[in-house]
Length: 329
Length: 94
Image 1 (cartoon, rainbow over the protein chains, first blue to last red):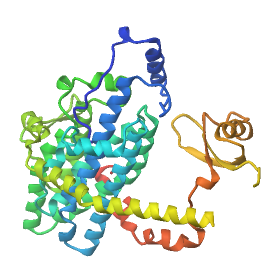
Image 2: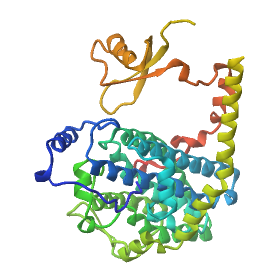
Image 3: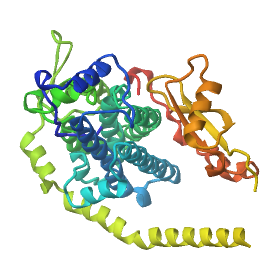
Image 4: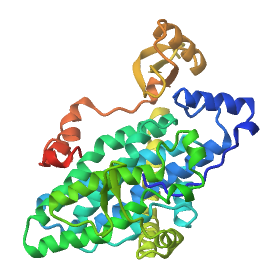
């Protein structure tokens, strides 16, 4: 998931070259596009933006949860959280590799993240203040991510689709461990239940923002959907997420922080309040509560790790030199 | 100096969208010929839509004798599996 407002560059059907028409027809037939095949430049660029943003989100997404590893309430919870954060790193790596098949290097993508040129999901610019947030992140944030990633398993670009299949297989654990934390807290002491409610209050609207702006303001959706690199509209997925999540909150005995939330029999879904889109655009611009901290932590990790990358390269060179010296004897 | 052709490992993508899978190996003087040979040896019955060949010597592999230390550590990490968590059926698929 985790791709919001990805700019898409396409041409209308009338302006398409014969090559582009043939390409679109392959996509319409649900054929997968593979790295060495011809593709329109716009398709390639849009995919690099989207997969890159997705990868960055996985990597930056480690930070809010990493914040709680040393403070997990039990050894078991600590192991679980470590395993989850480790998975996120893995997911980032799968996705960077998928992006690299499009002719961009991982270092280049990281550079564009660090310079602020590329984005990651707005959700990770919110702080994780209590242990209950670890529950709410797994339940809501990973829940929203799954909602978006499951249909992306059918995306037109082969390497992206295969990365999504791997990721989805691993993602169920993430949401379930989050919900298990919420169950524990919601059925715990009044103070614990209050923490669970507070986490839901703070993370509900930022989770709804994860699907991106409303369809009427989502200018790039149509082209991305024609290319099948976006499978559903933002509003469709958001509605699905709300419909799935509200009963889960009720089961916990928690209240979704939306006074206007109401079941709508006619549409067979909930009516709900849209998130504050001004806030969303502010967060994307870099003015969210944790943007500076998150990006700062990423850049610091990259710079602090430079000596290690250099040492490993030097060591590999030394080993290779030793091997060729032995071979020459 | 032996003039024997090097060994190549062959990977075939069976259908659109799937991963390439290792199917076997063959000898060939270079990559281009290896692909042609792979087509003749491994896809006579239309088994694939794409072929990769890699020189066998270029494949680095884990050693079978290290299987224990390599893979056993994940055995006791049962919490990495979704089934580790008891989630009631009422709340739907998760």
